[in-house]
Amino acid sequence: MTGTTGRVALVTGASSGIGAATARVLAARGMRVVVNYLTSSKAAEEVVAGIEAAGGSAMAVQADVREADAVERMVEQVRTAWGGVDVLVHNALIPYAVKSFREMSWEELGGKLDAEMRAAYAVTKAVLPAMTEQGWGRIVYLGTGLSRRPREGMIALGTSKAALEQFARYLAQELGPHGVTVNVVAPGPVESRIADDVLDDATRQRQTAATPLGRLAHPDDVAHAVAFYADGDNAFMTGTTAAVNGGMAMY
Image 1 (cartoon, rainbow, N blue to C red):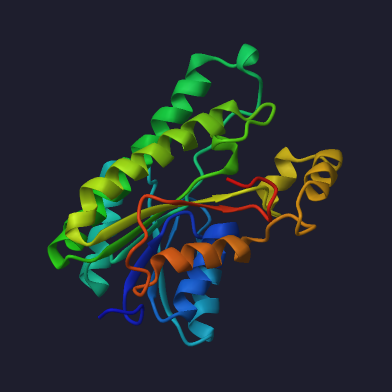
Image 2 (cartoon, helix red, strand yellow):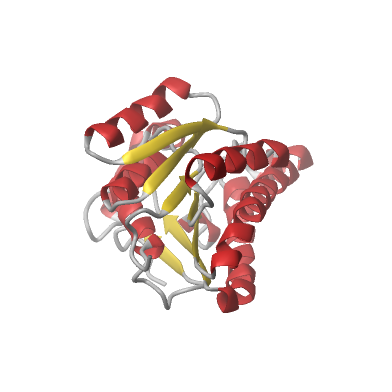
């Protein structure tokens, strides 16, 4: 199997937004998709139903990705049904405080760092044995443009995702000889329910005006970048970060 057909993809946090869009795109490309969710079982089942209605294969599995035991149970459930996970898309968003450093407690900053890395560690550890055994795997982490371009109030998210990006580079170096690629997709502002919570109208207008493509990203824009990294034919890119921001920042 060198392409995508029949591959098993685990997408964490896939009941809505970027995760749901990614699940749909990967399924449309022939992958069997695991729709992970934390609490939104109805939304996750709706994503699965949509994929199946379009002729794809999917299943919803609940797990808190911050809990290693829950992640292991999820991966074992997938293994029993479909075999090992070939593609990991770690998208689940760990909650974070939006405030200045001066107002922030260590629990808010350090807690976000700990939870971000704990989740990435747990899901990666759980899927790696099958990938390394077969000598093929794709790991894609969702980062953020805020890791490189700070914005007021976003220090907890930006710092924790910067740590995740560096984690990905180290893994890319270590896992390359085993046929596993590791990359990051770093969106700019995305039109979503979460964006509505942190972007007021004036900020949204400023960011749209600063974007050469003239709009903020849609979840599908990000999902297609993830799918590019997950593709079996994309065999020689690892340790990279794709900025999906419409040209708002050019690296």
